[in-house]
Image (cartoon, rainbow, N blue to C red; front, side, top):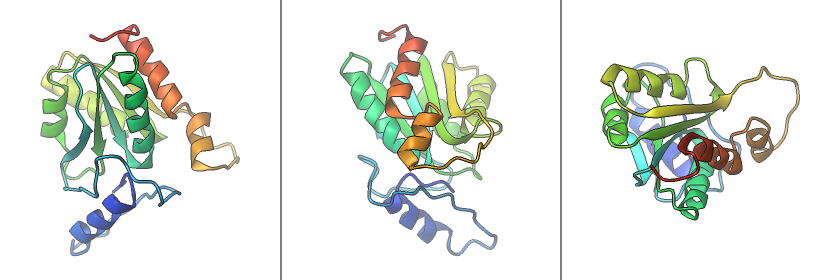
Length: 180
């Protein structure tokens, strides 16, 4: 489980406390910020839609969802209507929710502060391919090996091109800078 904020983490723990198997949690460094419109919502196998939009879908996982919401707000300022969906875990995979979200949206950007291989972007691309969706995907994830450096959460996001400004630049490049 990779909750987006502390409110969602608390709800996820309540939902998984009685499972008969171990559950791995990946938590962000900052427990003071809350994702706008998430309100602690969590449901296994489901996405949490925190912003609707029709031009592009930003699909995020974990505390980086704060940056996805901020990027969507910036994109609104240039006329691009971005949906923001949060995936907080797999098993069960939220295939139906992702398929429904992307069925009418021409572009998607997945955003995760984990490595690209086998992560959220790989999952979203599998849904697009399996369902035959006419949606172009850009995957934003960690592309480099650990280099021994450390820093704040915001510093790490900037370093790997996962901050709000990098997300906005990726969306503008994907869409040609205009709504679909």
